[in-house]
Length: 190
Image: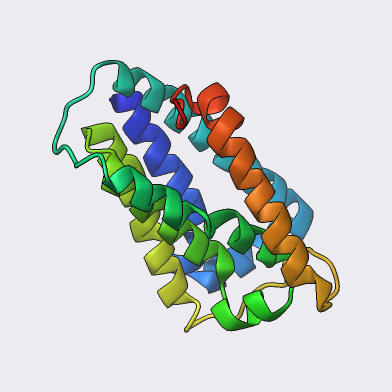
């Protein structure tokens, strides 16, 4: 569990720099240069992610169950997850979805984390998905007080929403039937 918690702390510390102090982040990027800052940020993020995934895998082997949920909540989870991948793609495919939601990445993470908290009640699950949910809420609130950085992506067109929805649902189907089982080790459709 120590490995998992260390990974959580490192991953979210790195991803919360702009939430806590956007000016400090900008000062560091200016001092080091934008590219070296991004490389350091990326390496620290990757290190945190590796520790988090590794530690989570170990923690799942000896689960400490905090709560169990009824089976029908799996269907609610599946329904909520329909929105996640289209929202993530809308970050890079600006259109009406991005304009309406404003910060689709934070919204996608909140939906993903909440949906998974509905069906996963072990301590490691609650820590993982609870931290992601809290981070996404804090990140969204912080956007009221800081200027958004331009995200890489395509030009805004009317087709972007259609692409985000169709491709997002395709990715969701891949996760549902193949990738979740292979990457996470938990088959969703049995």
